[in-house]
Amino acid sequence: MTQTLLRGRLLSFVRAPQRLTDSESYRYETDGGLLMENGVIVESGPYAEVKAKAAADTVEIDHRPHLIMPGFIDMHLHVPQMQVIASYAANLLEWLNTYTFPEECRFVESAHAQRIATHFYDELIRHGTTTAVAYCSVHKTSADAFFAEAMKRNMRMVGGKVMMDRNAPQGLLDTPEMGYDETRQIIADWHGKGRNHVAITPRFAITSTPQQMEATQALAREFPDLHIQTHLSENHDEIRFTCELYPEAIDYTDIYARYGLLGDKTLFGHCIHLSEREADAMSEAGSIAVHCPTSNLFLGSGLFPLKALMRRDKPVRIGVATDIGGGSSYSMLRTMDEAYKIQQLLGERLNPLESYYLMTLGNAQSLSLADRIGTLDKGTDADVVILNAGATPAMALKMEVVKTLPEELFLLQTMGDDRAIVETYVAGAAAKAAI
Ligand code: GUN
Ligand code: ZN
Image 1: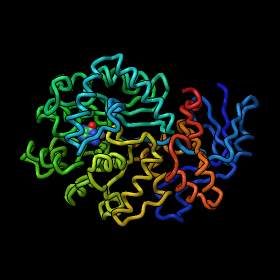
Image 2: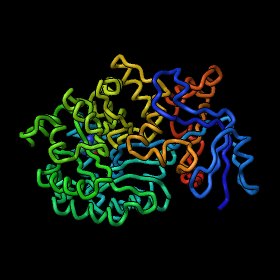
Image 3: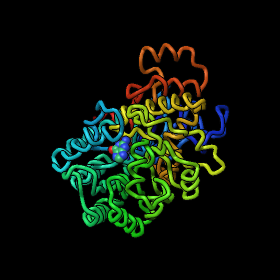
Image 4: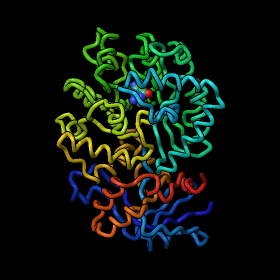
């Protein structure tokens, strides 16, 4: 197959940055070349060296002076909530009951699920996101549409049919048996097909009976390599109600632990109000706390103690995500801008190197997928984003005075959105141009 050679400034991380001056934590090639073939990166390095290794008929695309980075990874969002965004609610539970649950009922119709899945991937690509970890609705149709569209677009996606059997409208409920059987069927139909990964997805403890939690545990035992995703400790009323439903548990985290769901492939959305005991338990299990800043602010859920969790003696692994439609932007740049502001309010600093690490390699490591995505390493998936820090007149004006790479990254994060995404390459193909 024909090779494609991208030229520009290559930036990727090799580990978590310790401080703003930690230049060992990343690789930066000011005149770089990235050679892609059959969906994979085959060479990466100084342009002249990579060019010398390229085939004679290689298609060359000059992205100078833009940045070339690994595609962004979004660790938590909801496909059936694309039309829930911007719903005016006082808090999480009101938002779920008034807007979100009724909207998700529509996904019983496969035509609707397919239409929204198409828009979903268009928005990810438009915003430079090449891998996402998604909740579908309770309906199998919604997961089928999600995975079919991922295969069409050749994207590496993680997702699952939500399991929920109480405390929601009838049209949104399965049963312990149905949730188990349909999840098993979805695994058989989609896991490992194309670049699809199925995640076991109990929505949260409020919407699952103990019997359904047992069914989830059975799935987790049968398929130990699969990711598990759910919600944890987002809102004070939610926490209170959850603990009432499971009085035998010592706290919210303990509910999931009791059903064997606290492990190193488990992604817990939010985790804003964890006790020290819960953070210790998460750390010991290697579970991931997924920070969703635009959602936390929009729903008034609270200020996630990201830096405090990272620097504990027992640190908690972190992911970052949009949480569409509680979240208000598909952009990981907008997401990290809000993450930065939340740390400011907590008297903490989140430096731009840390932000870009989290959106790429950090999230890939939290997914145990860093051998495939999140870097520009030879042999990994050719999922790449091209970033222009002068994308708008106001950004271009500010760029006139930007002197360093961290300053440029910070400008992109503070002012950037989909307009700063020049192109998104999915498995080596220009996908944004194709929308
Ligand atoms: N907790 C349970 N379901 C949801 C959801 O859809 N969004 C958010 N933000 N929190 C949840
Ligand atoms: Zn969520």
